Image (cartoon, rainbow, N blue to C red; front, top):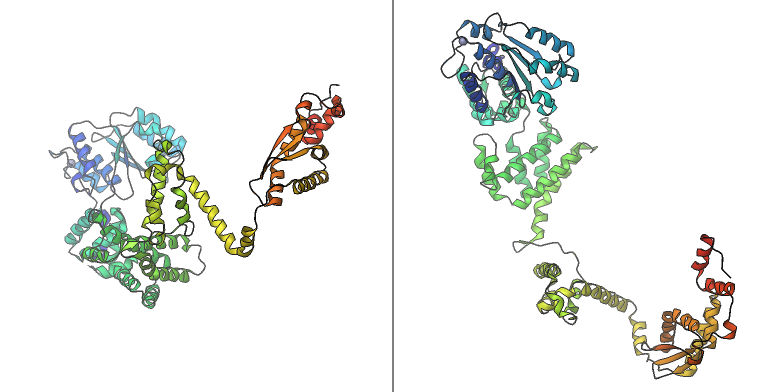
Length: 603
Ligand SMILES: [Zn+2]
């Protein structure tokens, strides 16, 4: 029995189109083409490995040479031609494996053979496997023959990598895309074989084989062969798992259970047990991630169709999935994925996996914490300032007319409001947020923010320097009086002198001061230039005086004496050079401009 089985892949190779598994879209088309005598001269068979490309090519070659085809376009398998094809002795079929024969010479040999018409039969069929492996020059040598083949020649090119085929080749071929064989198709085919061979095989075992072979029929057959030969013809779920080095899914179910009960010890012991069975950490991580993915898929009846598990397991998956929270599954998958990525870099692999298991153990607890009253609490972004951010909204009702067009801003504001309102911690906000009239909303977006921050800063400062702050508040504001004003004025002039601003200092010394009322005074100067000097100092000067009088209301005007306005005083009559020096002193950039551009003064 064993001997018979080692060759099942060859023994059960399909002999006609009808027995090809899972490619009916191609076999039907080919049969129709043969029946209607509309065969192309070049075919390109694309698709993953082990799905029947070469098999279909051989069946095609046999069928078109059959002298007595059946009415539905299949080979008879009894005529001389068919028999010689089945025995592999036909002269009308040439196979070239381009993976190992990819040089120009190999192709030239093939092309030379094409010149001779077949001795028997109608067609000579050339099958070039793995055609994408041909070198560029080999491709070119092939091109001419492919373009104008003799009427009796048919080329079948097979490849797993269609994108590597030159467009010039693609355009000359009829292209067939082979599909990956589905698990259920593979299982059916395996079942057929074990039935014929009278082998006891559990359905679950065949399903595992189908999953492991990932749509490649050849692989699934060779796996079956091996297991049969190792187990003397009894294929069980358990020995299949052992043979394929697959961890029983029950372990994952147990693992998940211990994690949800936050039984860390159980999870660690379980991992140890798995590890001692010879399963490496990355395999466990990968397997567990796939297990979680399957549970996630089961969550929704619509996606449950994607679940590909062995028979009898489906119900268990659905049951466990219904008991496990979606957030847990998604988070767990995330953790596992990250851990798998970092596995290679980890020095202590075992610790790395254990750490992941620990994280998963506490995951449920973490999720429970973030859930309050059945609702997930959103993360709070800012705590303190939130209340202030909206408080100034109501009073700042300037430009209420400009509200309507500012729709996007309004939207922004409302979103902000709702997130705050739903968060349980932001309760003080709610009454304020609902208070403002809708008309005031749009204009307030930026203003309250800055206002709120300022106020918050002030609060902080108050808390920090509370005492000094209180004293300052008590100190009363002073009204203007000429003695003190003159004193401050002279101080300021002295400062200017120190800063080497001699012209300004001069102006200050010669200026006349007149008090208008408690908070306002006038500075009278003799010339327009002097007025400018004073204006330059306005900000600093105001600050200086306001501080001195502790009175933020103090302000001043600068007047130029009427009689002097037009005339330049004698001592101000300067020549061009002096004027320039005067200006340069005030504005160093002017001097730099002159130097950089190498300007000369026009006297
Ligand atoms: Zn035949």
